[in-house]
Image (cartoon, rainbow, N blue to C red; front, side, top):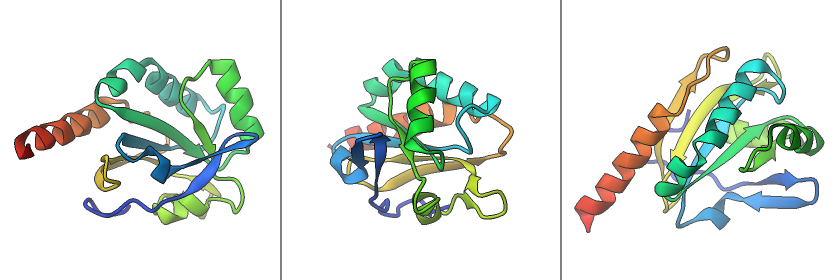
Length: 158
């Protein structure tokens, strides 16, 4: 994974079948990148559902969650509609896994993403990361703790 303190590599991926989202467009917000293996898998479903339910907690920290997998924009659209997600799922479909490779979380053996989390601050710097076993939902506790630490650092430095 990218080292803490690294400037997060910018990218642009499809958020809907006809709209792209660029990471740099979210400057002045904290960003949670949630790389996951596949739409529709049980653990990924649970993980993304949890982040959807935690939206108000993330919003208190001025944070935007972005789910990223190598699934197509059409798979993401169906998954989002079925589960009523309120955050973008980004399609790292073509070239397959390009963004996951930038963030060092692409699994070349299986052709999908590792289950990995990054928290990026408002200036685009990686402040926390976590690599979870593929079969385990990493939950939200580490994300919330990282967001609180960023907020506390900002308060101290003001």
